[in-house]
Length: 140
Image (cartoon, one colour):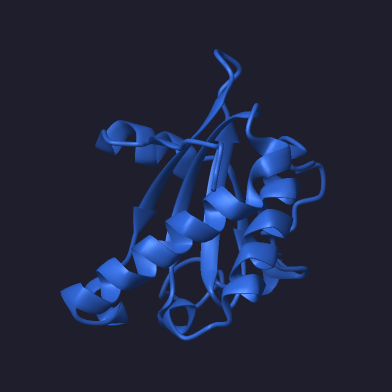
């Protein structure tokens, strides 16, 4: 049995706030999360696009991800963390222990806190050469 209970994210604003946090991507899911800094407790929301499959398949994926999160979140149960789990189709057929291990590993990454964004990793090196508009950048 599981001793951990999982509070749910319910309001859209909670999902959006978690989406502004750190992200961890994998083949079975993406995880978005932010440390709340208030009362302790893990809160999670699950989301899947219609592209993933039929409603029945999406619900099965959500149930598998929720169970795997409960099984893999033990060390992080006290973390003041909001998570959004974005399920992928492969989570439907993936071996359950792999799902638990991947979620636990991703949780560990998120629980370490905000990423160090000192390096401008989103800026493409040499980005200044790209024209910023459709006009040619010749000056007459």
